[in-house]
Amino acid sequence: MTYQILEDAFDMKMVNVISYCDWYYAQTKTWEGLKGNGNSWILNAIEFNLRHFLASILRSMTSLKEFVSVEDVEEMSNESMKMFVAKFFDQKF
Image (tube, helix red, strand yellow):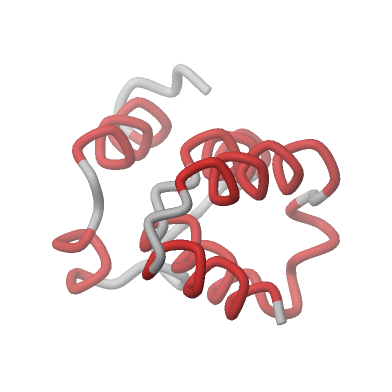
């Protein structure tokens, strides 16, 4: 359901809906609560550029190797890549 809302909003260029979802997920979802299907949430955050949500997930994660592949990195926005670099090379999160 959530993915469908994001996909429809993205297709219709409804940036305000995507921004609202980004804010809502960042405020209501925690990594501990997403562990069962965390991979799909991370991929959605990357695909739809949910930067606030992605930042909130990264703050509580210790490893991404099991959740993100090389293909996922190639699809990331520059801002998402910067967050990953800051998290795992500089430990700024």
